[in-house]
Length: 172
Image 1: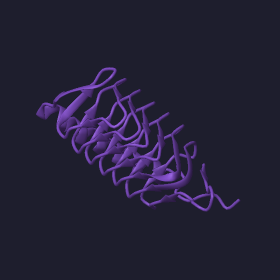
Image 2: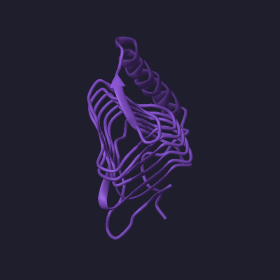
Image 3: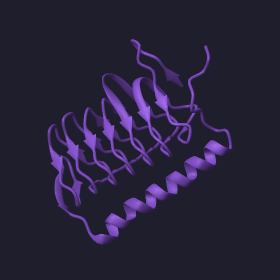
């Protein structure tokens, strides 16, 4: 479902897949070949929510005032709250990236990790634990980011082609 709020309406690229069961409200943009899966909430008021090209936001994730770069994966049940996630990064299942935090390009937030307010996860690093600590990623871990992105770009296109999403708000 896509809804206008205080004059701002979601903008979804025609090549993006947005599930009919996702909730996009206010100042939200979803770029080319991105995918937004069922039970996701993207709420942009005061600060926009931006979902970059080939980025996937998986089931039960919540984003408020967040910026996601290109090729980002946000795992099931993750929260990104007024934070920035750089290109080719991964935010793991059930994790939280808190207000003012930055996940730099090519970084990974492990499942169930909590990236603290204003914390930076450096490029090429893994954030793990509560509160998150960081360690360098291996080449195999970095390659995994691209593999997940490619899988979801393909899957989103297949779902969109099957008519299982909505790229425009309803005329009601």
